[in-house]
Image (cartoon, rainbow, N blue to C red):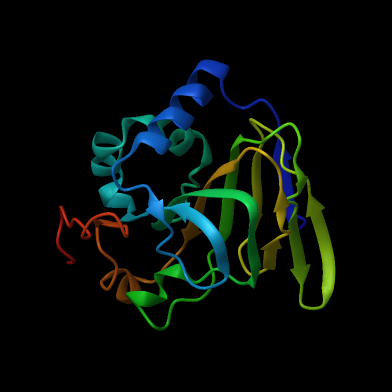
Length: 204
């Protein structure tokens, strides 16, 4: 992959509509649990290993079409989060390492996958900006029903959103961890400011 690739019209409009409604209605959906780079955003996160994938599908059946399409078979640990931005929201430059809260030695993900679920028609800003060190290698305008995969070690940000509606995406950091690192990652857990994290399977 040369930094990123995009696939258009990946799901049926019915699946996309269901996904949007279920995310917004989910009891875990709240002010974001992510770090301070995510300004004025909402969401929640699901952490899981490959062996916890079936639990994720049982708990969140509306994620199944995305998971079946987006997950890479060579990855074994995942950080999945819906991300909602409204007027004034932005994401400051960062490199994803969300699993470092569990394992300090984790490097950036192999790949990050983003599905644009909802994009307001009057959107200004909201572009995803990708940088390889100081070089800008992409500025992607979000388009509904487009699945974007980008190289996990890229610095990235989202320009401030100006819109009457909301920009909703579904993001998955996909990691290829060593067995030692994998021991530190939950098989399945939920991170949310709306509820205490729920561990279905303990760490092994």
